[in-house]
Amino acid sequence: MPTRTENGIKRKRTAYLKAMRAYDEKRGPMPHWGDYLVRPIAEALGSHLGPGYEVEVGTPMGLGARVSVTITQREGPVDSRGKPPSAWFCFEPGQLSAGEIRLVDFSRIEHDYPPGSIGRINGLQHPSDPRPVLLDLLSRARKQLAEARDDAEGA
Image (tube, rainbow, N blue to C red; front, side, top):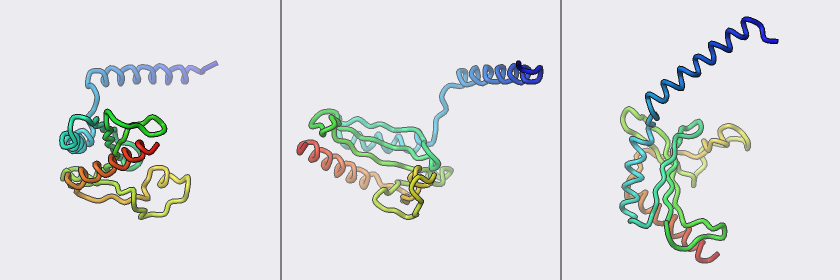
């Protein structure tokens, strides 16, 4: 049976959670750095690729607060799993007060984290490069999409 103190704490917790829910509903969803810095880049990539592509921007995830961008071809071949060709990029915040974002380079490993460690699970072994250039991203997207299309057509 709960004690008087436990009941008091439970009442205060319930009141606090109710107040927080009311505040969240009044305030609405909070934008994050990806909305301000990554989304415009993703939308520019999508507009350069044309109307046959869908661009999705994720929310900050993991210790690095990384935001992923997925570009998927709407029509065309699919791979053996039924997935359409897609390209994927991952950004992490740099000096946000200066508007800096960094592109994570998954082709390189800079730090050696043991398997199963927090660093490895969060992908922190991969370095990031400052100042991603739109033309470079567009070139990478086209290359990834072409490779995925070739794989799908071969499946």
